[in-house]
Image (cartoon, rainbow, N blue to C red; front, top):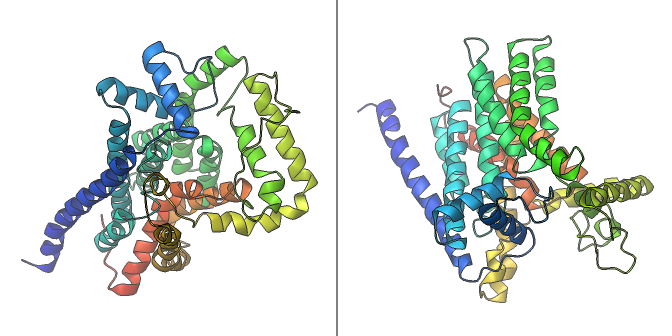
Length: 416
């Protein structure tokens, strides 16, 4: 057997083992969390929306646009198919997390080579950030694989050597639409995608037209949600009515001045006596919260640069919710976040930055650079947390795996 044949034969076996381990790691975390699981906050809202969808056929009672519909619809589907709820959701998380590992492998295999793809398995199977929400009923479990699938489809469409591939761009657009029905973070990315290809090609070309098609398809996926919101709320709501409170949580005294919360999102206290949101509709509360955040940002514009390093640092902090749901020695709890910093600054960031610089002129990596820059701006504009970092965790792993491949051995020819 020649070395090439041996690599080809070993890769599927290595991939199978990695995917099995990935599933078992995430399933163990999920089931460990299930015994002490008490839904609260965002999780409680998603579960309530899923329940009303399943039993009453309504998205919220009264109807709401505070959350996007795709994740509650998925939860309602799982609940309809199984008699178990929380445990079934956590098993679903294990499958979605394993799908993310597979998509990172495929993306790295396509853009770099087989060896780098296998290195990506080492970086993603036990990745602390990708496993953070394995025991939580949160949108990140669905959003991360959707973002990776969209990125893979966009890369495949833009690299088509036979001209414009309408079908590939349509698939990319459909996945972008599903991303925006899960979390509204990528809404503005649709505007940047055609502009990016227009600038990249220096003149309108096939890829620019393909990107425009992708945006059109993503809008088609969003139209039912927009129409429903207008019919129910009486206003055009492109994302959710929670966006104002997101901005207000980022621009307030605690997020700017309290060292414990600087650069983070701080929930606005609506229980105060002079609550300005009292008696207002959901849409009016959202608009008022946006206006309050805008006024604060303008009044404290000079302080905004001082919050940016804090926002970035908060993306490195790792402490899964399961840690707070089970008994652990306090000394062990205190060292858990160290793994997030160690993983980031030793295994990923140095090689990621180096490889990103080495490949800065490669057109095939353009979509990865664009997505990374976009989410970095989102973090700097809003707040820092591991949840904001997760959508580009896969991109960072691809760059880091390519860097480790370059550092530790011969760089093979790009995989076809």
